[in-house]
Amino acid sequence: MPTRMDNVGIAVRDLDAAVAFFTDLGLEVVGRDTVQGEWTDTAVGLDGNHSDIAMLQTPDGHSRVELFHYRHPEPIETEPTRPNEIGMHRVAFEVDDIEASLAIAARHGCHPLRGIAEYDGIFRLTYLRGPSGIIVMFAQRIGG
Image (cartoon, rainbow, N blue to C red):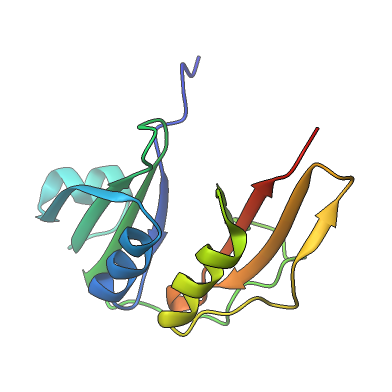
């Protein structure tokens, strides 16, 4: 039985760009590595698995994002996920200041899909396209 969620893994086109985006938002790199060999082939289920990875952690230390870029097998480009598609949807972060977070994202060429919405006087929310087309949600608590 699971005891906690450890991390969310995201394959990216450019590891350095993705790390820069998430560290500018305040996440901390807690490790980087290049992995390959029989153990990764077995764990991931891909023969010849060879990838560069970076593990990032939120400032509160409770959540982590693992970013990885495949050297082998060749990364497969896909269309960016849309919010209503089945499957892995988005990564969400609670932020102190949604405008400041959007300004940081904009420095990386990442902008809201539409705008900022308010949910029931509790949160201000927005979705944006992050690096490699990842959907990222920012949520700023305003009450409730």
